[in-house]
Image 1 (cartoon, rainbow, N blue to C red):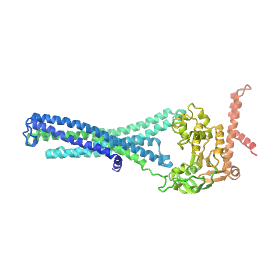
Image 2 (cartoon, rainbow, N blue to C red):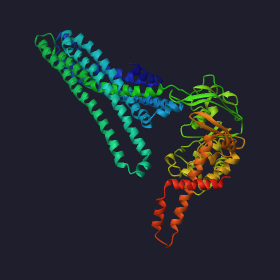
Image 3 (cartoon, rainbow, N blue to C red):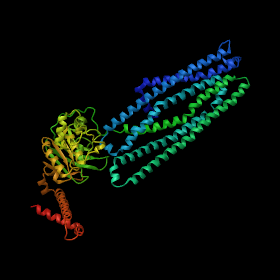
Image 4 (cartoon, rainbow, N blue to C red):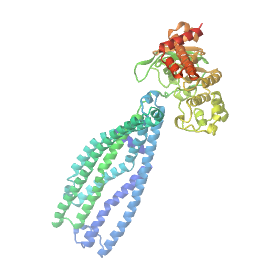
Length: 636
């Protein structure tokens, strides 16, 4: 009932439209209640001659005048009723669409505010299903479904009163099946609502499977996994079908049962009412009117099963929607948060601890002081805490203990938007949006001029390839930037960050998707652009970070080393080991490339395949040793 009341609470914003819908419904219901009495007047006062004292016939000299009067009144009321029903349906749907609009807007706005930690656990397909199909289920019920349910209650109450006034004995007989109807409806609701909850869940799972497959279509095709993905989708589709059939089984049993019970009431009225007419206690017109009232009530009762089913779907959908809307904002601006003024770029980590999902700490007592304009490199193995450190600066996550300060301001005490607008980021996973190249570069600065956009693209070494497109900066990048290469997407992401002219720049493995030549071009640009900015660079290769003002070596969430390249080579075993391993890997790669080139240029003097085969059979340890020899030769 709490969910039900909360759903209906959205109708308050459209109370005028909703009031018109329910006003039209009320007048149409009154017309429905009056029409059976017109039939009684024709039967008792015209056909029956008006002899019965119970008939309450109007004083009309000619019965034919009564018939014509009833005919014209019936036609007029039917036309008015049709217009009222149209207005009722239109205004009810208008209010329902408004509710759906508001809920979708709230879901989207709330999703924008939810923290990274919440999104880390969420599934895209689930979110899309809740924002679309679940909202649609709620719309169906808050519109015509609920107003029909209210009309049924009004009809039932009013008709019960009319029947009681007409003949209380016959009214009791007509209500003999009401307890059974009520019990059936309650039992049906208890059974169907959990089933529809499962149906909605399986719809979301199916949406997730489809979304992941479509998003990863290239990977699926590259590994020839189409049959597996088809089978996976079919399995989930079969599960959804089974859940729908379970719900349908309950529905197709309950709806005919409600129909039978309502018909039993009609049969009882005909049986007992006929006896009353024969005994002179009831007129024929009253019996016909009585039966018309029952038929008027039976019509919506037959829909009761459908309405309960619709209400159950809406409540199940509402429960899933409110799970999103009630998700707490772990990272949000304080009510009294002040905007962060323009910053110089000083960053301080004061005994910082951090963990995800209340699990094991990913950062342990990190203390760090970065001066404005410094270039700081972060190096370490996967899971050492590199990304965790940079994610705390724009407050994508909150610290568990300690503080992160920017120019002396605790990031938790300033307004989030003002903080993040002064921090530029190039993430490891490049995300571009459907639209033009210009729109993607200006994503963080929509008011940027054409000259500023071109300057940022030029600095990121993207202007040349952009100019090579037929439409230049108006070229559409396609969904997720699929029309661009990895290096091109990365350079656009760099241009997007640079256009902000941020005081703090974060580069998360920014050269991972570019070749050596492109990396060299980007480094030339960044060498100038990083001046005057506090820059944090995450990289996997030592060659990327050697020129940094300071290199932070991380190990298991702790700072295991801090200094320049030369200092760390002498004092830090972890850094030296990483450096040596990468040199070995580079040497092995060079040896293999040399051998491949030599084999490709062989002409005579034996089979090239035989020579290449002899080289390929050489143990990997020998190649590694060769790499070591080369490294030792290069190193003093």
